Amino acid sequence: MSKYIYSEELLNYRFSDSHPFNQMRLVLTTELLQALEFLDDSEMVPARKATDDELKLVHTADYVEAVKQAGLGTLSQAKCDSYGLNTNDTPNFSGMHDSSAWLVGGTLTACDIVMTGADTTACNLGGGLHHGFRGRASGFCIYNDSAVAIEYMKQKYGARVLYIDTDAHHGDGVQWAFYNDDDAFTYSIHETGRYLFPGTGGINEKGEGDGYLYSMNLPIDAYTEDDSFLECFKESVEVACRFFKPDVIISQNGADAHYLDPLTHLHCTHHVFEAIPRIVKQLADDYCGGKWIAVGGGGYNIFQVAPLAWSQIWLAMKGIPAPSGNLPKSWLEKWQKKTEVTLPAKWDADSENYTVIPRRVEITEKNRRTLERVIQHYE
Image 1: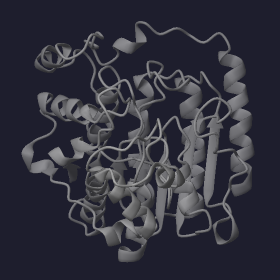
Image 2: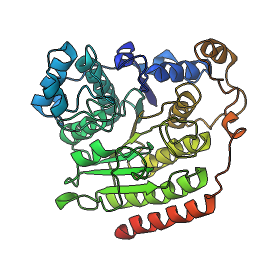
Image 3: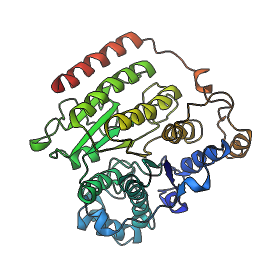
Image 4: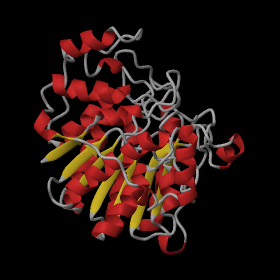
């Protein structure tokens, strides 16, 4: 019924030991699911490396070549600058083309599983690199696996694709790739760009030409909490589905809206990450015969947040209710030795140290006004 894409090659996307983007969170998530006995070998499918032609469905040929040269250390800094490479956010590393192409290939593997009917749902939690542009790297992202996947499903399967992005950062790279396209709908709920990279994703970014109204952005205020986030998400994403009537959904599931994330300013708990994939699963069941592909994304607290948040995606795909109580002892004992931060002993441990935001009422009302301004165009 569901497939979980996983290969050791997905772990090679690593800028440096000090860089916040750390694919070790994928190992933590996978081992947590295995410790819970909710993931077995029969459900795991190896990723593959995307071909150059597949990458070029979205990315320019000169950019793909530049990434190859950068990974070999033969691209000048001036050329790197023109392609957004070797920056503080997205530094060069050896073999970066191959490592990035594996992430894309993992997402394409999930697409083929779903679109051929082998299974109705599949996830590649190693993907979700939504800031990559056609000819430029940005925000930790070299190749944009979600954008390539959308174009791949459009061309190979003639699919109308709804992209749902719940990362705290705006899904800019995917949006701009399909800004004039009415066969793809890009939806992003994110922290307002007034305070956070990439600074885009305002409510007036609605698409252009044939793609007008096929881009929906819901920028929510800094320090938004669970109830306001979910109120805005549920209502707006339902409107998007009714309007677009997708054949398949691909969701980007950043785990950085959590109040413990070091790079963002939203103030959500694990309750949001329990709810989001189950809402998406219901939409897929209601609108496109259950066809749903999920990828990862942001999430920079790799020990306390990302594994618990991403586990919920797989559980939602399998129809398993959100667990409660203690986390597996074996998992805690192994990974506590790897970090100085205290791992959560229970699924809801984050609620114990939660501080309510004093401006809750004001923020909630502001988000409601934003929601109303967004959905008015579709009613």
